[in-house]
Length: 263
Image (cartoon, rainbow, N blue to C red):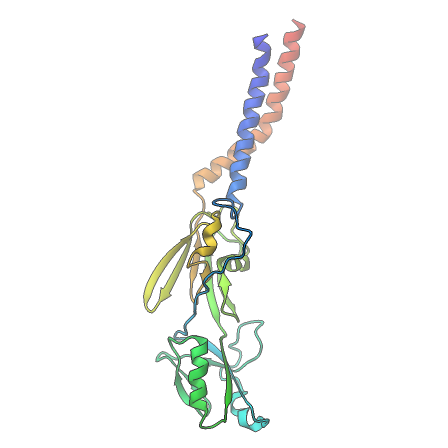
């Protein structure tokens, strides 16, 4: 009687190993599956304040409360033709030079490096006031760029016309993490005021939203490292062989059971 159980036990063991392997691979592909559950209440997260850097392109528009098109005409022609990000509105753009200035019509060279876009608006308005009464100035970053490297489906450098991008949006633009990308330890390389910083993000953790590296900053480099090659290859080989072996072992077990019963 005990001999009749051996084939069944073997088939059960093989099935268990197969299921465990499948679950491991599934876990590697899922985000936000670790840590305390998400709260039902909304949370306020700190959004980083971006500061203007050298070589930034600024989209600057100047309007006037006076209904005279001639008053703002010097500011309507783009200073850097074709420099705006793809998909962004056609607006005058100005390059921040190596000294931290933008060169504006009438106002001349205006220092903006290290300022927020709001501070840059106020500064530019003061420079323009002698030539334009009560100017209305709008400033935004026109070439927010970052690079995504490693185990993603579309590695490259991406440029967008807005300033607030999360790690999830950046990875989405790069075609998401590839099959063998490591979601546990994504590296973000950031340079601020000549100082290089390194941050690690674990997409499995639900508290990833609270990381200071969750929001991407200008010039960030995102690197998705591969899973250990041997682990990946072993998992693939094991799954492949088990898919073939499971029905064979089950069939052999059934035949042995039938043969034993007829003895």
